Image 1 (tube, chains in turn green, purple):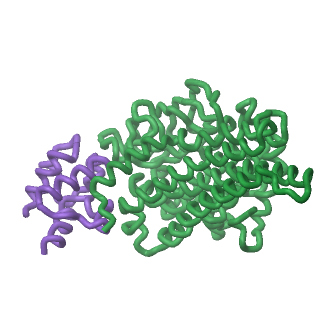
Image 2 (image 1 turned 90 degrees about the horizontal axis):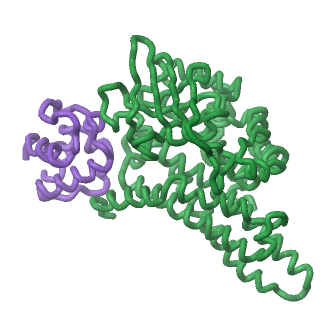
Image 3 (image 1 turned 120 degrees about the vertical axis):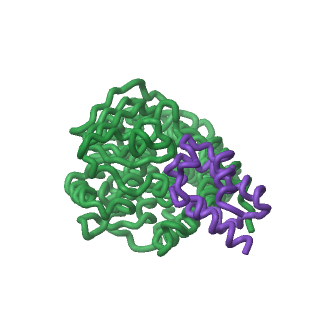
Length: 393
Length: 79
């Protein structure tokens, strides 16, 4: 059912399948139960050089497209949604660097090191007092000659304790406005993290995303020149929703495939009749197709717009495009729990039992993270504001 | 239509922490603290003040990034 896999599989896609089957799937339940980092899967992703998959070939990476990365995320999410989410979040950081910091020597060297050492990058955008609002920061880069200091009280850092490096948003300097943000990469050797709470959640437990107080230092070359506001509209927001879309598709596909196997089993037990659950399955597969179609349509459009000559000032930076990507996030994350719930109703008691091969518990709990971990109400509020001036003219 | 009128709209609706009067015509309004949310209020107030409607194609970051850019957009619509 790899609907996005129409061409011959590239080596990286084959590697992703191997990691998913051999290293993510066997530990997915333990990762979930113990709310622990999926070390086996992430180590395998590093061995297969999948963490640098998006880095251009000229710099030693595999030069995968965003479309291929979304496919990798889906492959991982079919077996372990937490592993897929970690991979997706890391790639958002890599893509931001590749698209916006390549003219900076320090970052060119960093990307080569990332290829060699397979560094895992975590994102530090949330902050006490600002919450999850990515486009505002209260902390600031404190300059001291060629060096800077940065202290951030983050409400959540996914895989913060396990990451090798952090990409942090902060006000450009101590005099800058809240919305005048820079993106800064800091090395593990140059920061400390003081964990300020736990991560005992309903789902996505393996992402290990507690609050941390981060204290970092670095060289001014580590501050990306392009304002974070520009990166956010052109890259961070659309790429996040698309890579997460891969995660939602994989999570949904895992549940749907259990329901399909369940219905096939019923049909084999009673040849010549169509089991009543097959009708529900027909509805379910249609819902799955709609989810896939909406992610794919936005992905195709973004791939075209992001390589256009006017990418920096064109449609990607328009309010109409923001509205559209926000709608993708809202629609996909509303559909996902509905799909998993329907798959559960098809499998019945065998889907409800935790020790059954049709168990839906992890998929359903992971699915509910989609609308909550980046809150849909916040996104709807943004759209409500945009619609005060958008006219569909 | 004057840049002074645009400045007044920004002062009333841009929610700037900095003093608008000391801002150059080509200064980056986002760097000066205008959020996306505030920029919508600025657009609505400009539409009201100048009795015009910005088409969707103009509703993007670069068109509202400075007083000069806003001035050029309004000139284009009222030409």
